Length: 65
Image (cartoon, rainbow, N blue to C red; front, side, top):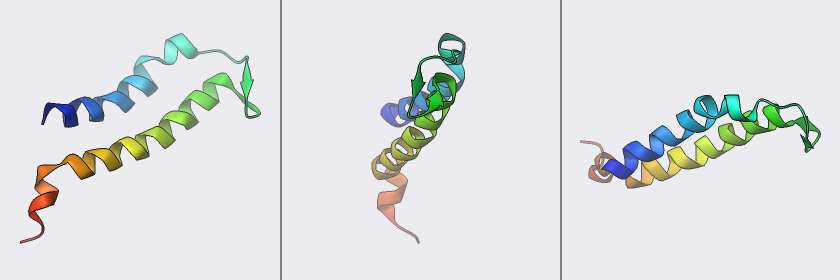
C-alpha cells in the first residue's frame, strides 16, 4: 500500500516541488520553453502514474458490490 502513496506523491513533487529548480526559459524543447515543457511532461506522466495506481489498488480488485 505504501507504493501507491509514493506514486501519488510523485506528480505533486514533480510539478510543484521541483518548479523552482527548472524555472528556465531556455532550452527550448519541442518548440516550448523548458518550464512549459516540464509542466506538460508531468501532466502526461501523471496520467500514466494514476493508471498504475489504479491497477495496484486493492479496492479495485474487489469489484462493485
